[in-house]
Image (cartoon, rainbow, N blue to C red; front, side, top):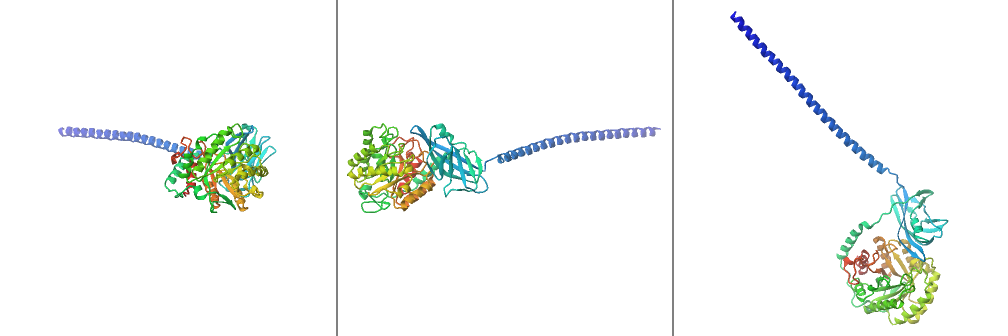
Length: 528
């Protein structure tokens, strides 16, 4: 009996142990299941978050791709015209100005046979044009190509097309820069592009140019002054020759209007150009018509005094000097012909014993002035000078701002020696078309003098074109052409040789010269 009780106790104890084990196992499984469920929930949540982030990234990428695609697919004209201007001026109560035109071809093929049409106001006058044919008729300016620019290559822009017009008002002039149409084989493209300027690289160009000049040594100047060495000059064929009959090239600079920048007419200034630049020529520009001009309200005695100072300073320095009757807004030299007769009678008598003086009798005939007008004027002025200075070189301007030397070559002035013909250029505007005119004149035996030029556009205040400037000097140097660069002043414009921030009138450092000044100094010195 006792044994049975013991057995029953053991069984009861084992039952309790087994029950406890069962409870423990079941509880553990529930806990594991709970933990597993919680972890699964966390994992699922993380996967959802990652999935959402991935979706957002994909959507973001997709949005960027769509945006990029949309940007790329924005409608653009295959071809379009740009008409811009950075210069206009009052002329005879009207507005004259220069318009520059370019054609951009974004298509996959060449375009040929192009025509540009620009709505024009009544009474518009086309004064001149380059690298194109340009005519105003029936309320439209029609521009067509010349033989060498009738094709615009794919993905390219045709530039250097331009014209000068005269209209009644500034608003009429401004209207010419909108509404242009490009016609290509009968297909019409309307609208223009926005204007893009090249000034962003100005500092870089100036810095690079300054460093290049500083790194090179100028050619050794000849001993003695230019006039001591070369004496009285004359014209032989198309060349200037010196007293020994040897070809000689005048290389120098022109003042701006002496009425406005008289401080640069000083001996130290001229000596700076002779000794630091290697120049042998100074051109003294006396405007005739513009505000304060000799024939339009200017103080004649004061202006003649400045001319006299300039001639004497140049003579003392042994330099050659041009006395320039600087017609411009008076258009036709016939306008002030009687004044010109008196002026050249006086100055040619005063300087009759100065063998270094050259006379330029009409700077830039323009505004429809014909060669016949210029020639008949010259045939009255030349004898007056010849009476006092029988051998002096005389430079005669040519039509269209002294560009049409080829026209003068067809009917030159006869009966006189030592007559030359002016050709002027502004390199960013006047390119192959004007160079071709100069070459045509030279080929016909006409002696050409580049009595004014700069390396910017024709406004005197646009972007510089170094490439076209280099092409011009290939022509100049290969043909022994003499030249005078525009202009000795600190006027705030591209063609000025001195920075507008510099008030010095002589002995400038390179840092005080403009980009044009740095380039021209290098050119005269022969630094390549």
